[in-house]
Amino acid sequence: MRIAFWGNFGALNLGNECTLAAAVANFRARLPHADLVAVCRDPDDAARRHRIGGIAMSGRTQAVDDRGKAPKLVRLVRLACAEAADWLRVFRHASSIDALLITGSGILSDEDEGKLGLPYELLKWSLLIKLRGKKLFFVSVGAESLSRTLGRTQVKWALRLADYRSYRDSHSARLLQNIGFDTSRDAVRPDLAFSLPQSNAAAEDPMPAASRLERVAVGIFNYRDRGRTADNAPAYQAYLDSVCRLIAWLLERQHQVRVVVGDFMYDDAVRLDVSARLVQRGVNPAHPLLISEPTASFEELLDQLAAVDGVIATRYHNLILGLLLGKPVVSVSYEGKHEALMRSVGLGDYCQSIDDLDVDRLMQQFQRLESHADVARASIAAGVRANRTSLAEQYDLIVRSVCDSQS
Image 1 (cartoon, rainbow, N blue to C red):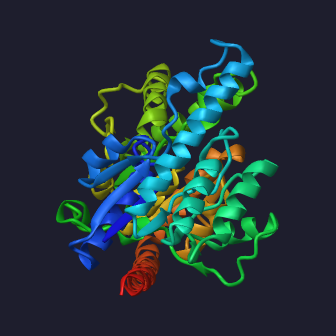
Image 2: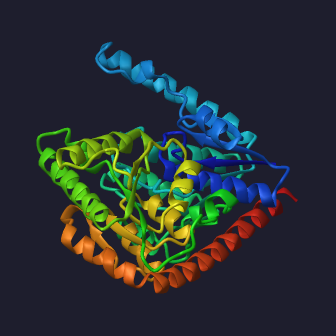
């Protein structure tokens, strides 16, 4: 039996990698002899990280995608030939796949995607898997930006082909409902990261939980693409000032501060920007209570979060992994999924928008969370248990469906 996990993996987004790791671990536990494979943009990276097989999501070469190096008609012909070859390639791969799982993350999005981007690839794989008579599951997927007519149409067509659909929050279900896709018969299940096995290294806090959140992880974010354009530069500079003011305030109150990232490709440069801005504010980069280290895997991120008492972050999976480890969290949100997540664990009052970030209010939220840390931990523990139970039920349902199709 061959199970394929389809998604934007191998791109150094640590949230996407932990959702794949969760799915792989749960299917290995339930179907130990199954052949597991990732269909993604960098199959070699996914195979190396997760010790599974890898298939390229797209077979198009960079030469075909390059612009300006040949007449337009020639480029169009090359592209058409490359796409025809890729449809045949995917059709052949589909013959060896028993079930294709669109595996969590905010995959239902057309943000920064061209006409042949993720929505197109999603439709291609979904259609050819079903033409081969195989199972197709959308598993705890997230819907985010769907602003283009073409992207919306491609996503809706792909969803209609599925044998099973679930969304990681009601926010995603509502967004799809708003663009004309009926989600009334679909399930809402938690983000797959909540089903990660809790390894001893990540699950054990080296110090007992205390009322005061002595050690705090501050997650940074590639806000406004680091202000690369003139329009975005002022907002990004204001964001850096806000983050550094928060860090300086925490250090003044004798908290240990650990700066964490959620996407190594995009966030690590922001981490360095924060370090430089802190120096400008007179904060010694060698401050004994300040830790700022690069992170290249979600396992490293888990270990970093295990070593703190509380989390203030923007990246969605920084928050989820903090919650999974029982840490009180404050969300600086950039999308409705954050509010939905925080409400689901009883922390709806500890959330604000990154576009309207009020540092004074953020400090007050942190202090309030600190004073109610024990209540927050109890609420988080209950929410995490419920999420893990819900996801276990979902995995069992999918495995039964796949096994039934084989009998």
